[in-house]
Image 1 (cartoon, helix red, strand yellow):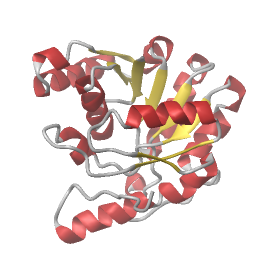
Image 2 (cartoon, one colour):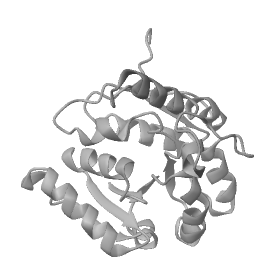
Image 3 (cartoon, one colour):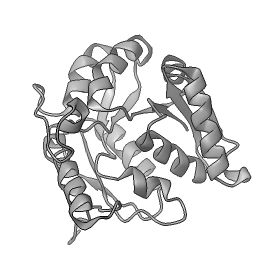
Image 4 (cartoon, helix red, strand yellow):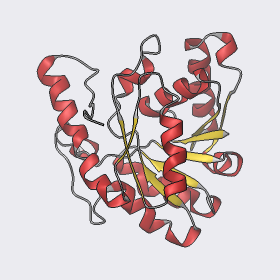
Amino acid sequence: MKIGIIGGTGDQGLGLAMRFAQAGEQVIVGSRDVKKADNAVNLIKNTLKSDESTNVKGMTNEEVCHEADLLILTVPLQAQMVTLKSIKDHVEGKILIDATVPMESCLGGSPVKYVNVWDGSAAERSANFLKSKNVKVVSAFNNISAASLTNIGNIVECDCLISGDDEESKQEAMKLAEKIPGVRAIDCGNLENARIVEKITPLLINLNIRNKIKLAGIRITGL
């Protein structure tokens, strides 16, 4: 499977790209600027062992959509709609995993406050915008910190809470999440539950700040 990271030059996108490349998956890092994508790929290759990085390349976001089998959107809230508009005509029939979290910090505000969006959640906003394109939107990777992902020498101490209306697409996202060492995928039901999951992220950021750490995560017990 070819995994395309849309907006993959930020910390979250880089971390996911590193982990999936390390797991042996083919990874394509996307950006509006192909030079930025190539720079991100070089960083990934320099971080990983040489035999773990031969399956990573960079492209524009639009090219990634054509090439990849599954897409992961890893842009901040303020870039979400701009990015979706740029790729809308290139995503017909794809699975799109949305990792966007509506944070006030994306709008110049507090890093520990959630911004309510009209659609209910960032993932639902993507689904509504792309509904004419037969895109299966899944919400995942919202609560896994970039610091945990890029700390590739250690496992990730966090469950991945996954929501989606299409069961097959959700299962693909769950299998992908569990390629990251230490991650357990949790089926959280329909996409509307992303409204709850996304709001966990500012809490984790608050815990990181209060405790002067970077790797706070969430585990679901009793399952």
